Length: 506
Image (cartoon, rainbow, N blue to C red):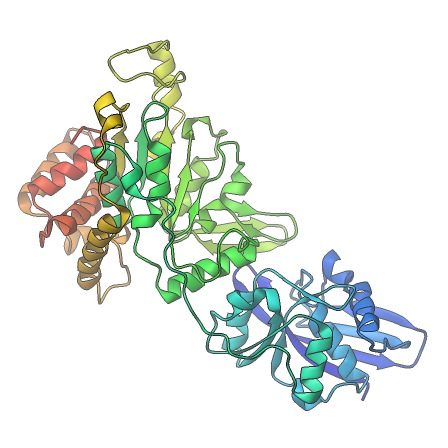
């Protein structure tokens, strides 16, 4: 037989396309031709595959070799096609029984010694293959934890090409097939009991976790803004299996599973430096469009410290994903959409020197400098922030207090109960958190009580809030009502939500 076939997957964003890899060995001058819009990394696969085969004691065909990746119109990238190309070549050389590789997906990069190395995007590749009807997949051993999340498929994890070929030919394996699916428990590295004082900021963080509301923390250095933001993922409910798969797929495409375990059920926490560019924040790339920080924080928290120090336009690039929950990146190589539904937490000093408290203590900044500093956060961005909290410096009494505050576990239980109330309210609707309630539903089905609406309409008439701000306050009031056990937001819930949005003390 001079024609061999195998299956691989090409990723465009999170969308996978099953690729039919065909290898033809014909008489003629020895050569190697790769067809199907390969990129530079894929074009170099010839030398990797050849060395891997030779070092695995397999023969390289000294003939005219043509490898086709179809559909030919779809661009292919990455080194994950090394393994399917090697399998197709061996099948074309009649070195492998074709009945044992039919309907099997092969993923992996080949080292020159024949070892299988990890690749990006294993989970979305498996999901695409499963949708295409493939039920068995061979993946590198180092990607096994990520691959086993796709429990509907038969996952064959291999360390080397030699082991794989022995399994194909003889059905023998060195590694047992059992891959129990277990989910990591939530990490407890950061606990809210470590935070001294700051009752208002702790309350705002709890409300943010209940409804998925965006949060701004303003205060002097050392007041605990970063500590509160780092502990916010710990009070969010554990991710469901579908959510964990979605988050893992994004991090897999970005190549970030070295920092985050594939089996983690904790909401992600992403904290880019304030010098990050717009591309780093929203995603992009010249040849491969990768997700940015806002997509890596999907279903979790995106924390930006020293927010006013960010470059021009960086924070404003988040305005569109804050509204839509997704980000579409258009480049010359194509257009890719990534989910980006996250809780945005911004931390800012009140002035350039950081010591302005409203009482002028030790602050060396002029009033113009103070106004100019916070004006770096644009009005349209601030209009999308639900909760604005002033975090004051800790007093000596608060710092010497020996009794610890509430733990993250205690707060998480309240958050989970409040979210269960919201989930029951939205059981027949396409959204799950209060921050996702569309404006039309707010005006028709999810109105606070009349006194609360009268309060908001009066603020709107005085132009103290915008139409978007009115809807934001209504959504926040539902989260406050869920925590308080109210079936409908009452006037006190609406007033508290309005005060938090305007940065008023509780």
